Image (cartoon, rainbow over all chains, first blue to last red; front, side, top):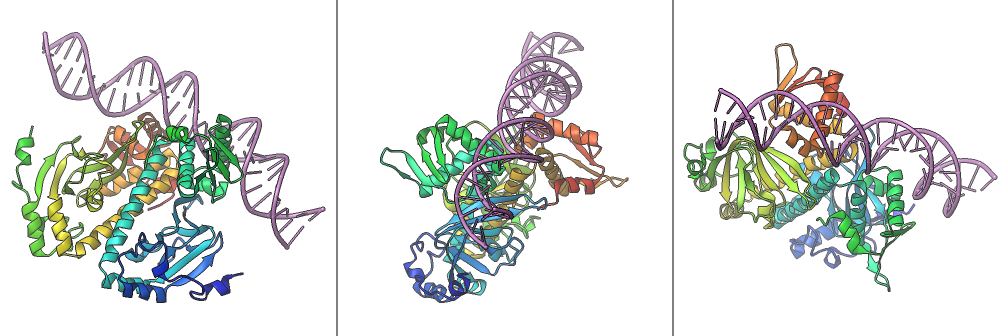
Length: 244
Length: 244
DNA sequence: CGGCACGTTGATCAATGTCAAGCAGTGTGG
DNA sequence: CCACACTGCTTGACATTGATCAACGTGCCG
C-alpha cells in the first residue's frame, strides 16, 4: 500500500505554475495569486488502476485535475450493466458537473491507467469562482466540449455497428498514444484491457474478441496483446466514415 | 404561405416579461432593463412542421427560444444516417452552444410540431453576456442539464434494447403530454410520426412498427395512429428499469 | 500446485436490419 | 368526380449482427 505515503500532501509534486496542462486546463484564466491559492490547497496523490476518485451517488467534495494516467467515467445501471461513458486523460478536469450543480455524482470516476491526480476542495473552487469570473467561462467551454463529444458518441452508438465503433476507439487511442515505426505503420500500446474496451463501446468482451479476429483476418489491423499495428490508416478511416 | 406575415416582427406576440417560461429559461437572471432589450431585439415567428431553425454546418447567427411547438435536433452523418439527438420543447433555448463557441452548428434544429419561436441575434446576446454575469451561469447550468440528459441517453443506447428504449421515449412524452382518462388509464397523443420516433431511438421504422405490435399483443400499451393508451404504467416502468 | 483473472473460441439464439410488397388516407390534376 | 401518385405505416421473409452460454488456454500469484 502506497496510500499512506502518497496521501500526504504535495510531496514531490510540481506546483500548478509548472503544470504542463496549465494553459489548456480549466484553470487557464486564473491569476498568479489565485493559482498559488490552488497550489496550497490542492492534494496530489498517485492512484493505481482500479481505484475510484469518486463513486456514482457520492456527494461532490471538490474537483479533480488529472496530471497523468487515464480516468474512465463509469455508469452502472439498475440491471447491472456497466459501461464507460467517457475517458479523461492528462490535463482535464473531472467531477466539475456534480460540484457545480451541488448534486450527486452521476458516474464513478475510475482510474484505468495509474497516474497522478490533484484534488481541489469544493470550498476553494467556490471561492475562486467568486473571485475570477473567467473560471466559470472556462467550465462552460469545458462542458460544451464534453457535450459535443458525448453527443457524437451518442450519434455513433445509434448509427454505427460494433466494428466501426471499435475502430473509432482505436483511432482515438492512436491519436493520443500512437506513433509511426520505421516502415511507416501506425503503432501503439492500448492503455486498457479488452474488458474496458467492451465497456467503452457497449459490447460484450466476446464480441470485441471477434471483431479483433475479424480485423486481423482482413489484414487491416494487427493485434498482439495490447500492441496494435495499423497497416493502413486510410483504410481504417474509410471503414469508419470519418467523423468528429 | 404565412411566412411573409409571420416574419415581420413581434406582431401579436407577448413581451418576454409575460412569457410563461421566463423563470425557468436561461433568461431568468436578467434585469428588467436587459429583458426589455431582449424584448425589442427579438424576432418572433411561427413555424410549420418541417422547417429548420438552422442547419448542421451553419454559422451561429443567434439563439432561439422556444415558446411553443416541438423542436428536434437532427444529425446526419456521412453515410446518410439521420437521427434525432434530442428534443426541445417550450421554455428551452436552442443553439446556444454554437453561439458560445463561435463554431458551426453541429446539428440541424428542425420543427417537429408547429409552434412559435423567438430569435435573438448574437450581437444582443453577446452584449447581455457582458452586462449580466448571471446569464453565463444560466447557460452553464443549461449545458450541464443537457449533458446529463445526453449522457443518460447514451448509456441507454449502449445497454438497453429497442423495446426498452421505445418505452422510455413513450414515458417521456407521457410526462409532457399525457393525462388520465376516467378509468385511470394513461392517455396521450404522440406529437411526432413513427418516422421520427425511429430516428430518436436509433432504429428503422419497420422495427418500431414491430415493437408496437409486440407491446400491443402483450397488452401493455394500446396504439391507434398517434393515440396511445397506457393500461399499466407501473408495468411499463418495470420493463424499462427506471432511470433518469 | 491450485486458483484466479484475462482473453479467446465455438455453438447457438434472439434482436434488429434489409428488401419487397401492400394498404389506407390524402391531395392533385384532368 | 375519378384516377393517380404519394406519403406514412405495416407486414412478411430473410440476412446479419451481436449476445449468451460453455469451455478452454495462458499467465500470474499466493
